[in-house]
Image 1 (cartoon, rainbow, N blue to C red):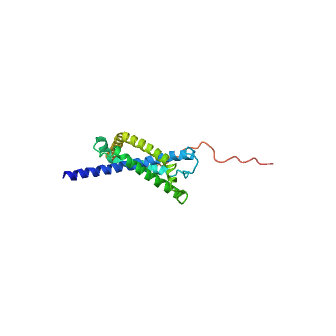
Image 2 (tube, rainbow, N blue to C red):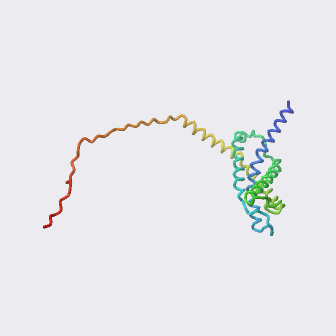
Image 3 (tube, helix red, strand yellow):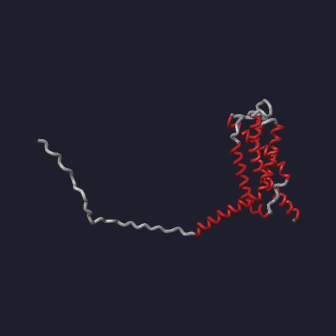
Amino acid sequence: MAARRRKGETLRISFARLGFCVPVAVIAAAIADPIVEFGSNAGWFGAGSFTDRSNIDVAPALLAGIALLVILVVRGAHAIVSGSAADGRNLGSLPWIFALQILTLFGMETAEQFVVFGHALGPTIWLGAPPPISLAVHAAVCLAVTYAIVRSRRTLAATTLRVIALIEAIARFSARVPLPEFTRRFAVACFAILLPVFCTIGERAPPRLS
């Protein structure tokens, strides 16, 4: 029985870790990719064609990562604030986040190349720079984004709970307040008294020519 309980807790932590790693990895990839490509296009890493000179994949990836993070926070807000959430955000998550970040980068850049050019451009173009430099930049961004999200996780969860409570209060108040009944009465006004007109009708005839 105890072994089954430990196995369930391990699975719960594993799913929590995966749920935390995916949005962080997507956001980190969307932030690091344009930084690396900007340096390559500016010639910081020497002469050579390291990028496809397109960033149309960055905004969709960033929005997708933020949306996943919002869903994660909304679903686990109570547990995060109370401290009972499964721990999926320790240092052991960093290798998983980095691996998912590189996988996300490959998917982003490959899809972008097929959309823009109709085919893949090369085996390392998706890195956006010489491999050691690209991996180093992505690792630094991975660490920074993970640290920022971990530090602000409880604050985000508390803010989410306040927003949800406000929405629920507005909905309950709207349900309790009865809608006013509007009645319209149309009165027909009859003007039976003729008012005198202080003017003459018609004009004076022109003088007769003789």
